[in-house]
Amino acid sequence: MIQSPVSKSLYNFVELDVSEIGKYPEGIRNICDRKIHGLIIKNFFSQADISRVLNRLTRKGPFPGSPFGDVLIYGPALYICDADITQYCEEAIDFRKYCRQIFSGGADFETRLTEVLGAMSGGSPVELPVTPDGYAYTPTTIRVLETGQHMGWHFENQFLHCTPGYRHLETIVEPDDHLSYFAVLSAAEAGGELVLYDLEWSETEWPDKEHGGTRKNGLVNGKLIASVMEDYDKMYLSPEAGSLVVFDAGRILHRVSAVEGSRRRITVGGFLAFSKNREKLFYWS
Image 1: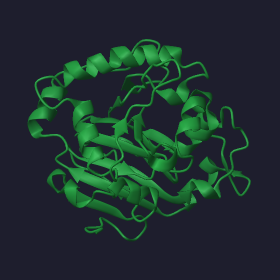
Image 2: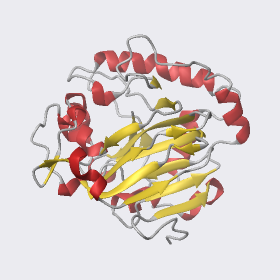
Image 3: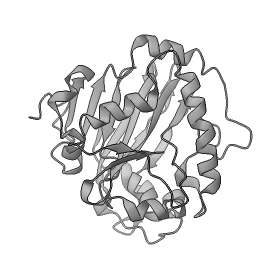
Image 4: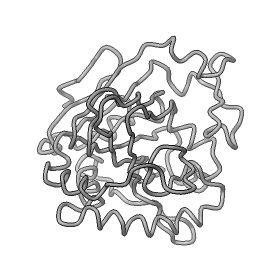
């Protein structure tokens, strides 16, 4: 039974405590089937886990040569890769070790994530996708937004269908139900909201199938999305620290607004999609 909507005005998100996930055994499937648009699961991280990890995430500023500009992102990201993702997979090995280190002393992130998602996947096992060469994808990235920083608009589907790094993944996952997940380690004092637009993937066109995802040159009625998106209604979500959010990011245009105040916005997140025939639920970043 679907209960406790955060908002019915634009998109329907269900808010619950992590202790209640057993009441939503089809929660992930319900998002894919558009019965709801997302889940906000409180207390995914304990306050002790949050404090421990934040004390270890002390870096300021991006890594040298980072492809993400001024934003600090830990871990490799598939959407910026070329068709050959060997380097991404090699970096994923090191990043998984790093994640185990920063989450040591508390709940292991991968274990915790697969347990919670598995309780809501309709019985489908939760796994990392593996390349034909036997390399596992990275499970997540850690994103740090400082004061004034934001995440630009996108659909997750633009990466699945319009970037070369997704070529293998596109052959093994369902083509439309591309979800996003993120867990909040630190919420901004103000700003840093997840902004959802009343504009969906099916209303857009992407002639550039090779690099349109990163060039962000999709169209709405022949006009660039960026030139018209602010004409659409919006919904704002500000999940508190410790929460896990899962939502229909493949089909809903979204962004993260600029962080205000002195506290950084730090999230651990990635993507979800069922395998074809929904035999498995894959997660990656």
